[in-house]
Image 1 (tube, rainbow, N blue to C red):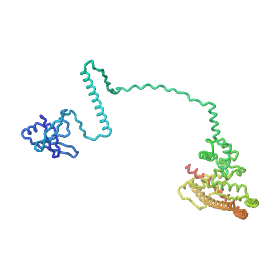
Image 2 (image 1 turned 90 degrees about the vertical axis):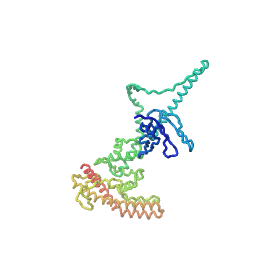
Image 3 (image 1 turned 90 degrees about the horizontal axis):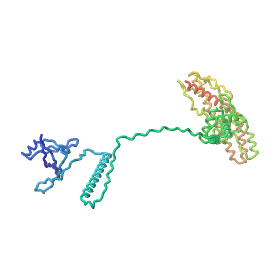
Length: 453
């Protein structure tokens, strides 16, 4: 179909008027020759696209003309009586149709590209002006001018070859000189705990009860981490050598403090807890068999010394048995409390009970019942011994604060109370220590059975 260009005014009913340059088909050109009245409609679809309909033909408003050149014109009003005149503004070769919003990166890229194009255009224009002015001047006045060309970065077609890696030369590691090794050994020896310090720790730990080599080593390592014991390493050979001086290795691979060393342990040791100090006082009182009457009489005659009487304290408050946290749950039944199960207590050799052998679930339940019964008695004795300790500590506190005239009265009261309670305290202490050993043995047997099954 032959096409021809025709410029026509389109009024959309707004204040301003618009000019559209359309290429009309031959049918519309024929209609224009007969009648200049053609229907013009503007349609907007749901997507926001706009179409111009002229005489039944559709034209896209933002369509770029097929020819590379587009005429730009505007309507100039001529007053109310005269129709506006069409004034040509020129022609453009290319148009940029922006149909979507650009992101920040794309917008920056277009901006840089436009600035670079403008810069190159200015440089070309300056070169053209210089060349034209130089040609117009006479030869005598011509001045040699040099125009520095703009360097263009040409990308390399092939990457540069990677140089071959040189073979690594391994150098022998420097050996420490004998002087350095001697210095390091001297530093370790200086930081290591002394034999006297280790002996002091072993003495005070064994004074509370028998312990294995592993338990002692673990306790001292914990003290080193808390900076209570000097040194960065604890030599096992040194520990064994020190233990041979203060203790004896007996059954179950446990070290027992020598009886003559018990009096060397002091209650004021900085790393004892309050319960451990009370335990040490009770053990020393039981071992020595001292009677409070002698101390009270000597105190009254001197007129200035203090009465020191202590009762047996619960020895195993810091042990795992007294915490009652390591008992395994019974298998297939509840705990049996307050029932005579008929199981004989574990035999004791040198203060260490022989653990019972558990080979079945029934035996396991019986031993658990024995443990519960004995543990209730153990807790009751613990409370009673703690009450004795609190009673005599209160009397001692009153004695320390009393005047010299009242101290003799308090000393007699201490003597009378101790004479009244000494037999009962001795019985409770022996029973308490025996239960402590038996409960520990039953607990070890139960844990062994649970781990094996």
